Image (cartoon, rainbow, N blue to C red; front, side, top):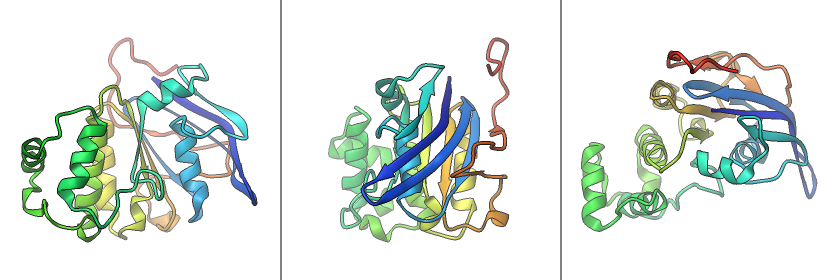
Amino acid sequence: MQVRADRVSVEGAHGTLLPPTSLALHDGELAIVHGEPGVGVTAFGLALAGRIRPSTGTVTVDGAANPAKLRELVAVVDAPGVSEPDGALSLRVVIGEELALAHRPASTEDVSRWLTEQDAAAFASVRFENLEPELRTRLLTTAAASRRGVRMLVLDTPDRHTSELESWSTLAHEQAERGLAVVVLTATTPLHALPETPARLGHLDQPEPRLCRDRGEGEEAE
């Protein structure tokens, strides 16, 4: 699978949210995308996932413009104002909602079992906003990756919760090693501190994503 954004821009009611930006990545690749803090970062993630229509440019999957297919293939994780959980809810409730979204069993027992498997049962009753950033991002990402048919993850500004890069960079790399395409949107981490040379919002020529899983025969990138 390849997802390609070609000169994608998004206009808002009061001006440009996202200047023309290009990006392409395949299964097993990791791309870090950096932009200025604000709604433009999330707008790019939603465009990649087929959840908003670009004002200009196109987003394609395997060469075809198919927003419905993108919505099936791409999960946007923790996007502010979109998929970000209500911080006042307990972890137990949030995970129940995430499992239901993934069309997985989501009874009280199912949630408890899932949290135990993730070494997070002790935090079941904790308000979601009080979780450590690493745990928050790991659980949301793991739940999103379990959705049926998902082949690409977009982690929306995990750096807004912490300055500890390893809290999200190792996780993103692990998901790409599993074969998923992974995009991490960043906004508050200094460019020089990022673990990869990032793609930049508003740029058309971008660095190649990192290949985290070797492609077998017949899996060469097109």
